[in-house]
Length: 161
Length: 170
Image (cartoon, rainbow over the protein chains, first blue to last red):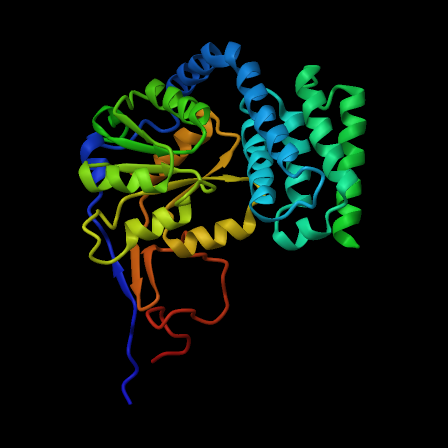
């Protein structure tokens, strides 16, 4: 029986290169510096934007009404934490990104949410809220670092259990 | 000529349910002379834009409702959908989203951009999709950019595709 070769390799036209008129300048440091400068112009809004994200997290947590992290409310809480994980460093709160990353690990799947320790869930929400409120941005902050280390190790233990 | 490229004529669709994140990306792109940026809040809105307008590059987040980033990519790559099936797609991901990376590759993503997004990381991704585009592969169960980034000269295992040169072949 003839063996079929069910694989086709296609080289599509590179329309991006046609439109750019050639290769991009190799790592254009001036363009990158311009962009970093442009981001700095937004920086005065970063605290407000971070507070907006925390408000969403708190609302999602409140919607659980003391119940388990489950269902649509659980998913909403995870998404809020996931957004903070992705945005914290951009908004110059890298410590908050790590706190949110720890939280995401704890409640990433429905199975994990079902077994998540309620006090550990609350501790993450409160830690993120406190860090943003008090401007604890980086791991240079001794209390922030301690809190982060404690939460990360508790999550690691919970996931290993 | 190498190094003459300008992003000014490229239309980029940025899809993220977070308006502030879209603003950050738009701000960076604008600094790269990519001013022709359209935004969508979720995959459904993005599909409507793709149906109505010419878009050259899609940058999308993953977690969105009602249609997420993975379903958006699948819709772009779907056969006979009327959209450009070769549209380059950059997906925003968290650094540790290993499972998502695998699912996004299977859906047909072109490149990933890890959050937090920086000007440098976004520029590098643009370089890759413009200057070093992947070939596409069609099989009965997959259509999208070649999931193998490059031929690995250090790989000495058996051929993994029928099309690969067979070891010991006469």
